[in-house]
Image (cartoon, rainbow, N blue to C red; front, side):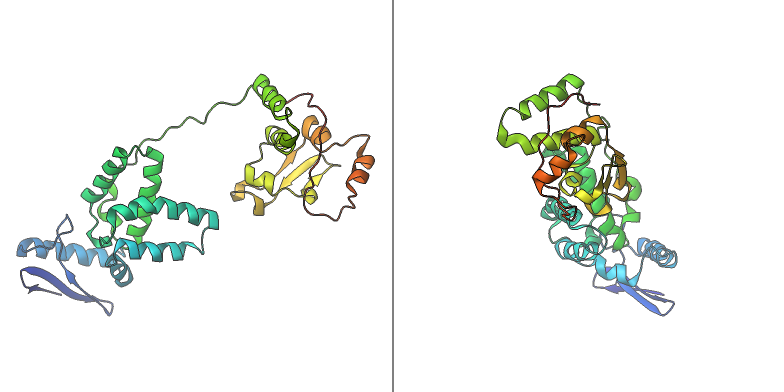
Length: 282
């Protein structure tokens, strides 16, 4: 363990468990220091961080990267853990962060600079939830660089709106479906609306619906993991009177319906179907 000077600045050079750490000593703002007493105190903190696992040789090398370069590595690593759509979302969220920090090294990003970024985004009228998502990605990158613990307690989580909107009333649902039935070319959208109103299926779940997921005997439709957003989204939904007998045109005329579609039970994709007038929405 040793402190030495390079020009005007203090550096530290020490080894722990055979791994050598050689780096400039920085103050709480992330700036190199000329003060010997401060350098001595900061060196002890650096050694404690290494011993507690908060600083590693790998994290140290990642911390030296410019934000734009570190962002590329971060996204490449996330490919193995996220769906393509989630990766695209993170890439979109990183655009304003990269535009702000640009070529700044991760080790130079301080509490003040993150607060400045939050203020900058608020001036651009960004929503609190959007800013929190962007800071969340920045947090993951700084954690990998072993820098987030230095500012974690100083970066507030902005308050977000907790309202989830309002459910449509029966009259509003009926009016929506009457409007959807006004034009023949809206028929597919009308049928999708009927299924959505009665099964609570997401858009991606509805688009991924296949005949093999529909059980007319048990009157259920099964949402598979491949078509839903999360593991919790995989579920079996009971069909009520409206989607079960109207959207799928079941009932006494079921055999005629299958014959008109020329369906033999082997097709995997859900064909377009026609529905009779809706009687009720539950």
